[in-house]
Image (cartoon, rainbow, N blue to C red):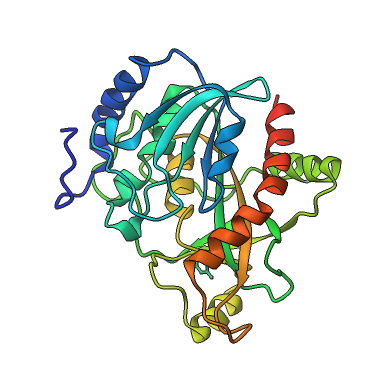
Length: 285
Ligand code: HPA
């Protein structure tokens, strides 16, 4: 049940058993109950250095989880204190473009919820669709458009986790968005707000796709976040999303995009994002 078998989808109805096994594996190492879960996107892993007395669990040590394949993604679940607040952090994440089933992609956030987190903060590196968003822009996710063609909720439901037809009217809680803006103001960091479009990847977009996604109402585009946000809402976990714009969307500058540039831009802006997140977490009720 908990062996990784990439040939089979992970059905929602199977998640309770997987989560029970994962919880047991975590509880063998720590009794820390996180208030919040934080998923660190590409190039943002250094936030984990700010944890005090962390217990770090490599993905490969958790039942059914693979080691990550993307450079810049370390692949560890950490539990510790962040500015005094008990948190779970995902350093690296499981992406669908790595061949991971959507049910696996969302297990980390479901696990965070199961361990006690009421709120999950999803961060990501993203391309700018909004022409006003230069590299280095921080964007609160106001809403998303899921164009991955995937959902983690396909198949028999687990009613004990969440409903068959989850409501997605308020995926990114507005009260938390306001708190994020307050945190950014207090830290002197500018913070935009916009719509995140989630694609499967792993290619970057064509310029024609970037124009289309902008026309659909997107402000940022990336290859993560939407499946995790859906799973959180299914499970009743509050979601906060922040994109770090690492590059203008393909075609805006005429320059080709590459992963190294994305990682470098994320690392450069990472400390600013870290300050905002730290302030936000410290002020959580
Ligand atoms: N497109 C998709 N994903 C991304 C991008 C992009 O331009 N930049 C960083 N992640």
